[in-house]
Amino acid sequence: MYAFADAQRYLIAAKIDEAILKYMKRGEEDYEQNLRNLGLWYAKTKEKQKALEALDRYVKEYNDGLYIEEIEKTRDALFFDTKEKKGTDLLKKYDALIERYGNDPIGQRALYEKVKLMLQKRMYSDVLQLKEQIESLDSELYPDKEKLIQKAALGLIESALKNEQCQVVLDVQKSYDLNVSDKWDFDLYDCFIKAGNFNKAREIAKKHLETKNLELKKEWLYRYIEVDFKTGNYSEVIKAAKDLLALVEDVEKSPYKKVYRVLFDAYDRLGDYDKMLETIEKIIEFYGIRYEDIDRYAAMVKAGIEKKDDNIVIKYGKVVYDLQKKVGKRIYSPFIEFALYQAYMNKGEYKKALEVITALDNLKLSAKERSRQLYLKGAVLDKLWQNDAAKKAYEAAIKADPTSAWAKLAQTALEIE
Image (cartoon, rainbow, N blue to C red; front, side, top):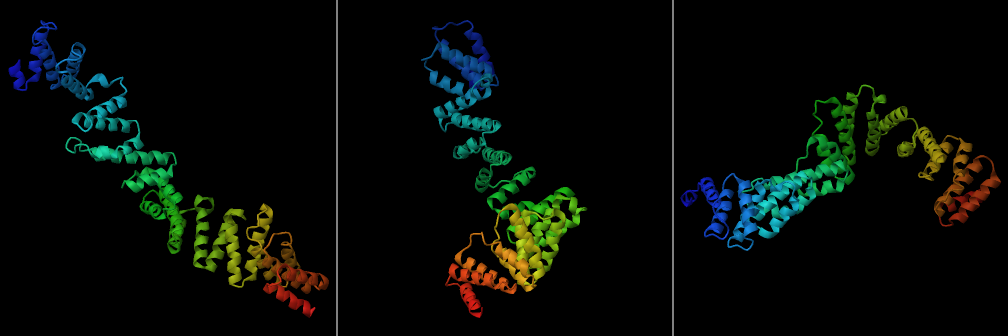
C-alpha cells in the first residue's frame, strides 16, 4: 500500500487501504493512521466524493484527532470539486474559507470561485469592490483574473444602461477602458448627452455613419447632427443635415423633419439670414405655429431688426406676441412689443403701434423700461393727434424714471407741445 502511495499511484493505495479498514475497528493500532491516509489519498485522485466521505468519517470519529487540522484543510480544498456545493449557501461558504485561509491557496481558490458565482448572479458592483483582492490572485493559477474584473465592469455598465442609471455608467466608463456591445450604443449615446460629454457621444455616433442599414444610418446621422450642434460645429451640422435629407424620401411624413429645427439654429448661430428665413418657413410648413418654436420666431425678429426688414419683424413679432398671449407667458416682453411698435411706426401703422405699446400697461417693467414704454406711447398718441393723452404719457414717463434718457426725450416733447 505504502509502496503504491510513494509511487504516487494513490488510487490503488486508497483501494488497498479501504479493503484493510473493512477488517479494522476504531482503537486498533494504525486505524486512525489508515483512516487519515484513505481520505488524503483519495483526495489526490478523481474520486473526490469518496475522499470527502473518508474525511468526514475521520472528523466524526476523531474530532480532536492527531491529524484533524490536516484533514479539515484537505476537506476544505475538496469543497470546490465535490457535490457538497449543491444545496449550500455558496457565498457564505466561500466567505468562511476566505476568512479561514486568507491568501493561502484555498483562500485564493475560494475568492476566485466566489467571484465567478457573483458574476453568474449579476452582482457586478460587488465584484468590483473586490478588485484589489482579485488582482492579488496568483497569475499562473488564475490567468483570467483581469477578465473577471472587465466582465463585472461591462456587466455593470449594461445593467445601468438598461435601468437608465447614467451616472453609474459614466463612473464605470471613467475607471475602465471598455468596449460596450454596439447594441447599447443608443443608450450609451443618450447617457453621454445627458451628462454633457458631447465628444464621447459624437464618437459613438460617428462610428455608425458608414453603416449599410439605411434606417440606422438616418438615425445615427440625426444624432450626429444633434451632438455636432451642441459642440458648436455648425458648418458640419449643415453638411450632415443635407446628407440626411437626401436619404429621406418624404420629409413631411418622416420623423427627421425635426432636422430643420437644428438647421435653423445652426444658421442662426452663423448669422445666415437668408437660410434662416428659408428654414423657418419649412418649420412652419411641417409643424404649423407652435409655442415650442417661439425662440426661433424671436430669433427671426432680432434678425429682421438687424437687417432693417420691418416686414419680417412684423410677421414673426406678431407670431411671438400672439403665442405669448395664448399661453399666458411673456418671456419676450417687453422686447417683442418694442420691436413691433417700431416696425409699425416705420410703416405708418400708428393704431397697431399704439395697441402693442399699450399692451405693456399692466406688465411689470423696470423703471427704465416703463419710462421708455410711456414715452413711446406718448409719441404714437402725438401721431394720432391725441395731444392730451400724449402729454399725460410724457409726464408719466418722466415720473417713472426721471434720470433715464427716455425721461429727457419726454421732457423735450412736452416743451415742444
